[in-house]
Image (cartoon, rainbow, N blue to C red; front, side, top):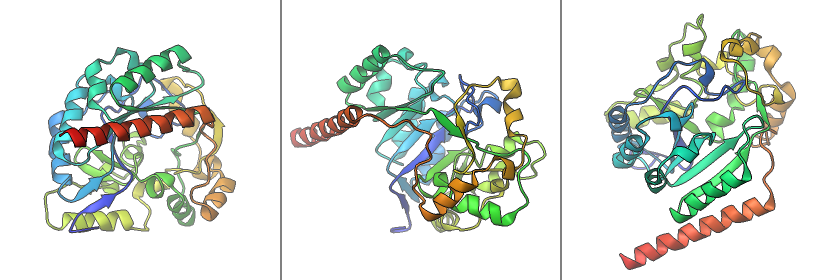
Length: 318
């Protein structure tokens, strides 16, 4: 915290839609279970404008669901940019709709990341067209392969408070990646916490009980920092598996049966060995993402160097 403002060097996420064109088993945003929802650009601007007075992030990540399903995505990007909350905007997509976006989209964003899954591969030729678009618009671009997922939550949950604390304390989303999330006027320290109460019908917790209401108040920054630094698990943590769900090969599931895989207790769905690993090493790999080749890493590094050079030249010529 500096001069009554909370700073994060990582990210703040915005789910511009709740639904998705895919139905990945154990989706951490529970998108296959949710109704269609399109975030309103004016509401986003209002929330981020207030938040920007007390909080600043390195980047805002636009995701979902599948963010490219939003019909007014450009207005959303403009709203975020105008709010002053950040200088960088990333879009995280499964890439299935990326061939349809206009050049204006590429002009508006700073980075595009594609998450590629075994059942929904994207051809090398199509990837090259994305790389070309990114290059000519000076946009950072990366594509990551996720061959495996981890169980994300339990419909039954657990009453074991010690286990809940262990899950919370090893949660990478909350503590390592800091996937802060803004949703419908509230600020959350992780992306799954607003969705679990919406899906589990017998859950007595309301979504807002896991977050902090965004208000224009002198004490808001302090309240936000207290919330972020709290060692107490969220109410949703009794059903969440954090980063330590059991590992399985990625698959698409029919929406009508999607929740059936989660009809087990936390104890049945948790990977206790990996939990112990994270307790000893909080940044231990989760084995979900396929290793990228050295060539891809070098390409990404070259892109970053090129963007830095372009920015320096722009500053010199202004």
